[in-house]
Every structure is written in structure tokens, then in C-alpha cells.
Amino acid sequence: MTDHTRSGISLRVNDVSHRLSVDNRRTLLDALREDLGLTGPKKGCDHGQCGACTVLCDGRRVVSCLTLAVAADGAAVTTVEGLAAGGELRPLQEAFVRLDGFQCGFCTPGQLCSAVGALAEHEAGWPSAVTADDDPERAPELDEAEVRERMSGNLCRCGAYPSIVRAVLEAAARQGGAA
Image 1: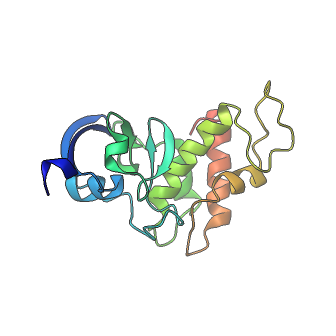
Image 2: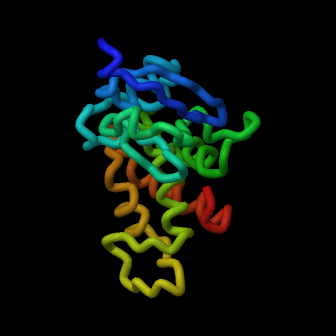
């Protein structure tokens, strides 16, 4: 690779700053997994269809297999490894474990990051495709249909969807919407 095909980037991943030199075509997923050794985000389909690689980029969920690392330059990235603070699981993570919101566990990191992002979107009042009342003055009601729609970009080959939905709803209720 020549200097014209590489770029220096800065990423703050799970509250740790990193300076990387990456090929301009390198995905954020490959930079996280191969350059930084974070194996939480999974390479499932590599086409942005399964959601196993979902991470939070400046608090918003992205499929890291379709996000170029250079496009994330300067961003704060949170992977599943960064969700627990001080070794304490978030209520969402606890609910996933207690309610069996995973089976094989392959999709779980993406499901968790997506759920954190989806709940933040809901709390901010962003409507989804199934939101009945799009009154900007009040947040849409968080029910099973809302959770299913907001999590629809994350596939679970084991079919743990009912438990995932219950875990997201329980965590939202427990934390007043914040997971």
C-alpha cells in the first residue's frame, strides 16, 4: 500500500484512545477486530444484513462491516466490551442473561449494542415505522411492536426473539427508558 491508499485515524474505543494507520478501504469492523483485538463485534454476513457487527458510533448504532474506518475518524466507538461499566453489567445485559435473550451467543454483542442505541432513540422521541402517534412532544410508547421494529436489523439464527424483546422491555422499564 502506498501513502495515497492509507490514512491515519483516531478512534476512542470503549473510552481508550487509539491512533491507527489503515487502508482507506478497511472497514471499522476489521479495524476493531484485527487491529484492536476486540472480538465482540462479529463478522456475520459482511453485507450489513445481519447486525452481528453493530456497534455504537458517537452513541448511534452502525453496522461496522459497512462503515469505513476512515469515516469513523475522531468518533467515540462503543463495542459490547465497553457496555459494562467498572465490571458491572448494565440492566440490559442482566436482563439478557436472566431472560435467556441469547442462545448460541453469536448475535448477542450486536443485539446488545443495537438495543442500547434503539432505547436511546426511543428516549429521544424518535418514531419508528410502527409508531402510531408521531407527536414530537411525547415519546412513543415502548411496546413489543416498537422493540421488534427497532431491533429488526439484528438477526438471531437461534430464534431468541421473544426473550430479546422481553429483555429490552424489562431493561427499559427498570431504567426509565435508559438501558
